[in-house]
Image (cartoon, rainbow, N blue to C red):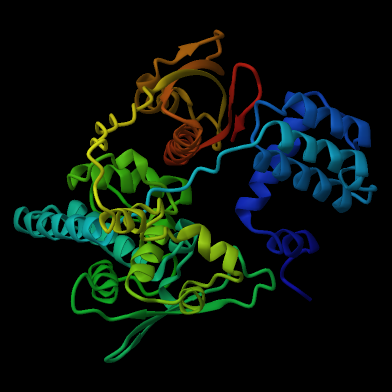
Length: 430
C-alpha cells in the first residue's frame, strides 16, 4: 500500500507556488469580488471587465488559469474556454496595452564588487568570532556566484538539495533539480557548474557546505543570530529583499532596481557580449524556445547609436549643423504610499499558551515600520501605509511581510492565518 494519499499525489503534480497563486486567485474571484463558484461564462467575462484597468493582462491570464483549473478539478465545465471570455481578454489587451517590465541585469563588474565585499566581511567576521555573520556571508556568496554563473532563477536556487550536489574533480560540480518551472514532466534536470579561476561558484558553494556541515536537505537556509541553521529552505520571496540589502551594503548604486531575474539576465548579457551564440546559451541556461532567450538578452547597440554615429562620422560636417544639448537625466518617480489592510488571526498550538508575546513581536518588527493602525479591539485587522515606487516593489514588500509574519508565528508556536489586500480589494496577498 502506498504511504501517501491520492490528494498528496495530486498536489505534488503542481508546483507549490502555482498552488498558492491559484488559491489566491480563486479567493479573489469568490471572496473579494463576490463571484459564485461554479462560475458562468458571463460572470467570468464581467470579472475581467471589472479589473481591466487595475490588473495587468498577465495577472488576468493567471486568474483565468486558476479558475479553469478549479472548474476542471471539481468536475465542472470550464467557463474560461468560451469565446466571449477570450474575446473580452483580447479586447482588454488592445485597449490597455501593458509595457513589459524587465529586471535590471546584474553586470559581472557588480558581481565582482559584491563578492570582494563579502570576502572581506567573511574575514572580518572570522577574526572577531562572529560565526553567524560569517555563515550568512558565505551563504550569500555561494548564492550570488551560483545564481549568476548558472543563470538560476530564485526558486531554482532555493530548491537545491545538498545531497544532489556532486563534485567533478578538475571540472566543477553538478546540481540536480527534481523540479523546475519549465520541467512539466518532472523528469528532473542536472546542471553542470564550472570551476573558475576567479569568482568561482564551485569554491563558494563547497566552502558554505564545509562550514555548515550539511549533508542532506535544503542547500540554502536561514541563519539565526546564534549561528544555528534553519531546517527549511529560504523562501523564494525572501531572497530578493536579502540580495538588495546585500547590494546596498556592498555599495552598488540603486540596489532596489534588481529583482529575482537580475542574475539570469546579467549572465545572459555577459555571455552574449562574449560571443556565445543563442543556441549555446539556450542549452546552458535551459530555455526551451528562442523567444524566452531573447527576452533576457540586450543587444550591444540596442538604440542603434553606434551604427548611426559611425555612418555620420563619415559624412562631411555642414556649417549649419550644431551640436544638440544633452538630454536631461530621466526623472525618478518618487515612492507613493499605498494603504493596505492586514487581516491577522493568531491561535496557540498548545493549550494555555498565550498569543500576546507573539502578537507584540509581530507589531514591533513587522507592522510598526508601516505605521500600522489597528482597526478593531481584537487587533485582527490593521491598516498599513506602505511606500513603494512601483507595483513590482509593492508585490515584493507585501510578500516579504507575509513571510515574516508566518516565520514569527512559527517561532512562537502559534497558528497564523493572514492575508493582505489594498483598500479597493483589487490586489491580494497571502
